[in-house]
Image (cartoon, rainbow, N blue to C red; front, side, top):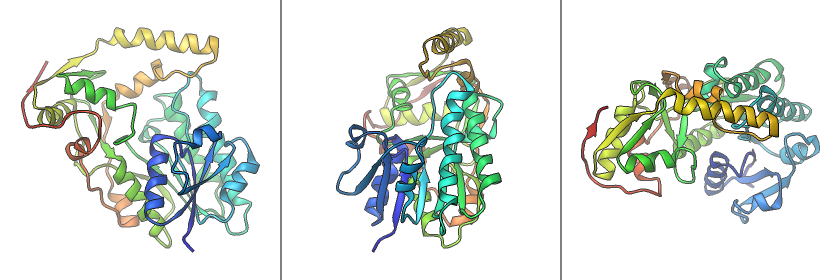
Length: 319
């Protein structure tokens, strides 16, 4: 019988992609979902579901029962206060770990963190991801765990970055910070391949690892615009967004969110992340640990992402 892998955050972009790849690779998949309606996005024939949440220990036990591994992909990416992020990204990790630790032979655990955790002072989100990693480092006793820090992940089904690439395909590349800021990228299929490689390892080393698409030194905005220009066959002009144009709505968002209790994406803290000059990482340590190598860099990954045109080259216009 094939191994059972349990997944949190299965209805999100990355979690859904992982469920599909796991099922295609022959694993049995069990997913934690908040409701039957949310579960409709999953391939019903390939994924068993458990209705519940990270706040419900009973549903976490049902999720993990009989599993060889747990992939923890659930996370809060929107919010205006530390508590909103910590409730999911810190306490959710702690509750899941406690359930796994209580089992006589606990499954191994892969926790999806974020490269933002490298700079926890920048935002509530970044700090919560770092603190979630520290829960694993300090509190795991029996559970064999690994935390992955991916950079920006894109690919089919992604909804946050695709609008940006569509705008760039029309000839304008809006830049929230310095055009020379550097960052790594990761195609979702490469992330899924890394997870499968980890599952195939008999004794993967514990630890916190970064991973990216194999482009040494990452990308800057000029490089991204040049790639989009080649794919779409038109000039792409970088347009730096004035600081106040984002700062004012970010501040208003945070103020309104605290008054009315909703969770915004754009806040002053999120701007700190967007404007940080160095989000470059490398995959060397992870490759050595699990034998995985990235295969897809940005130009190929965008060409494999539905939703925008793909043609031959033109030029980049610098601001």
